[in-house]
Image (tube, rainbow, N blue to C red; front, side):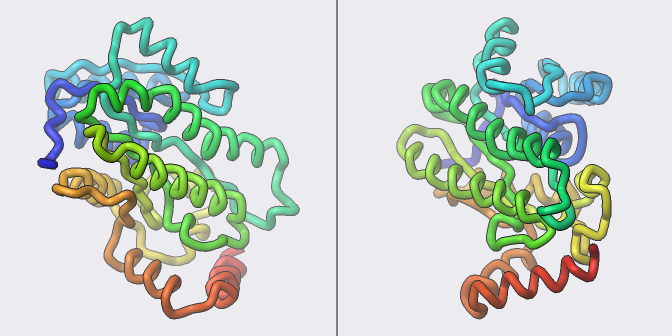
Length: 267
């Protein structure tokens, strides 16, 4: 397979109002893809849409939606159909985390986290994967996290949701082989976005250096451009080294205890 030609594509991006979602929109617009931008904050979406239309002369549609509602995939598919669009690529980027001991977390916030980070990813992927496979030339990217690779004390639910995303996406990679659809789980480490504002503390990064959204998205698109794209990619050389060492040189008990000590210092 050759590098993806996004000209003539229509790419749907969730969580597109800021951070990685907005950066995916900018980099894909620069590669001539039309866009459907989805998020709760319409004013930010409209501002981004205007910027991209003016800079790249592409079609950009805005869909205001809370992905924590029931059946987000069905609702999104209905709105896309009303617009008369056929989605050829999909970026499931929306998500958020909760920092602190699990037993002290707000149950309503945890339910919302599951709805956005797990249910919406699965539901939206299922709603559009038929279109993506029939197009046979696009991409499906689900944004996981470095948190997917080990349990995360004090971000216990977030790590579990991202482990789900990683596992689901890698399975879809295998199921989609031979269809022309390129499927990828993207696992960033700590990144310079609004993520930590939503979490409620920058300390959830564990003191690690923050990557730029541009570099993270470039990593994903470069992986998809390979002749034989992988099922998943970790953004950042040091993150890849850390994931390798955690799997090969330490026991599961040691890894969990190490993460627990790190986040205990930041709590």
